[in-house]
Length: 272
Image (cartoon, rainbow, N blue to C red; front, side, top):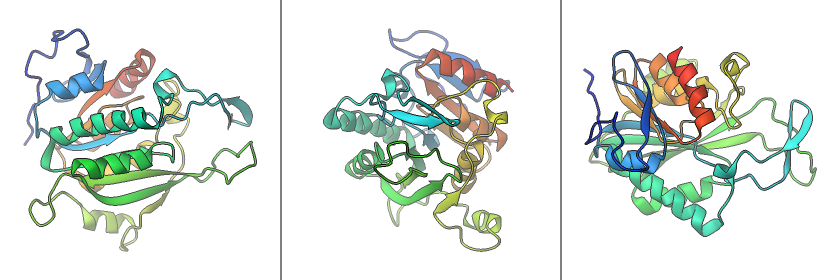
């Protein structure tokens, strides 16, 4: 059974000056992509309407440093959206969007948030402040990470994904497809360290996003925590990977992205 989630006003009209606009819709009208401010969109969506959130928020690591891409030294800056505003302001931002996510999730809903050491300590603390129950920290290990050019610390080869729920312990039961995950792992309990490659060239054929995640990574999370027909939301959808994974698994999807270039890329991938 599927259900349509709509704004309290017509989603095709501008409700407020900063209200995001619908730029893509699935043929059945149950999934859509918005361009604009995710906080404004989340304020307009009905409470307790989302089954699962998977998102990749700004890491705040654009600090005028350098990194290695395809063997070349390049500037690490990804855009003003990724520049830190200071520890306190960064944390207040994380707490604000996570509070909006908490309101949107159903009582049994879960949320996945990925990040590096630049952001996950703040995200994890904000989750605890808001009443989320953290279930797992998934370590995504990259088989071929870029080398550390500074040679002053270890090579960064992992990212962390925090999986949390709104469900109260002993009260509501969140979705965890344990047997399916066990079957995918040779009939053994799946561990929280996942070794998966970065996005392939095929996944980037419409263009590149600086923090694009592999579809296989997102899809595994959604297979574990959602069922067909469930509604998945991503407030920082970037190149649309969450939507691609959700739709390929028979889930519904709502996404929001502020950057026009990234929106154009996501639209091409979702249309396909």
